[in-house]
Image (cartoon, rainbow, N blue to C red):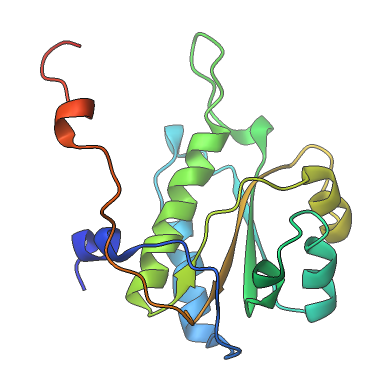
Length: 170
């Protein structure tokens, strides 16, 4: 599968088969994140793989959806803001860096036949407490990971290029 096909096929999956994700596939997904670009190559990311049902249940308190905790794996993507590049005007890039890494993982998951769903609507304090994440580390996003138990069509509900594309100036 080429990257463009993976982009078109990527959909938010909310039903997963109760099938374990093979370690080789899981590690390729994580490696795709590790290889992502980051501002000044700072690589401020950390990833936590959660497979333990009891820990997933506790994580579910931060995002109370049964489908979320029923996925075989949950990946928690974190950043160390103190290690990330800061633009001259003070804009911090740790969220961008982790988002790029997680997008790499999501696209790799598609190629591996796995589904994901970007989760940003969670209680960060609960996630940090459950996983013992240090105070200086921020949780950027989470994604369940597993074999999809639903079929969705290619992405179609995006704005047309005419609404978002500009040449030379706004």
